[in-house]
Image (cartoon, rainbow, N blue to C red; front, side, top):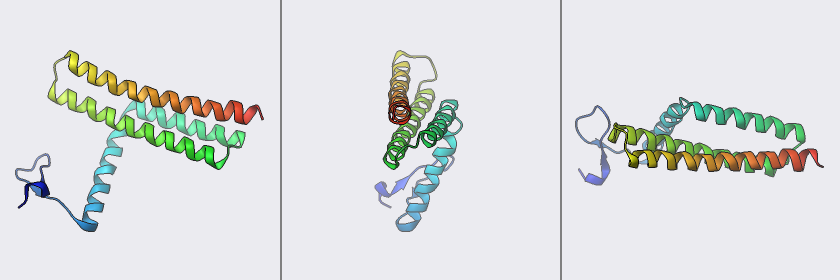
Length: 137
């Protein structure tokens, strides 16, 4: 068995053969669904979902264009991705370095800052669409 075609899963004693073809697609979808389930457990992510829903309602009220909906959806998907990466960083740091360390703190803070940048981008764009494109027109 080729080493690059194997992986280890938690609770298993030996390498697991990687799926190929359509099975790989279903396996990858399963892993992504697991990540989404894990992410929904994060309070920050749930708050971001609520903010996105509020932005969509505001877009409906002001009559946003299709492009504006698409741009907001893309920004939100980016924020979801960054939130997932931030959560992964936090979990890895907690696993590898359960004691408080400066390096672990820095890693978590940087992940949090990346999320903040996208939260601000989402908020600024939503405010622009609602205030300047919606109510000012």
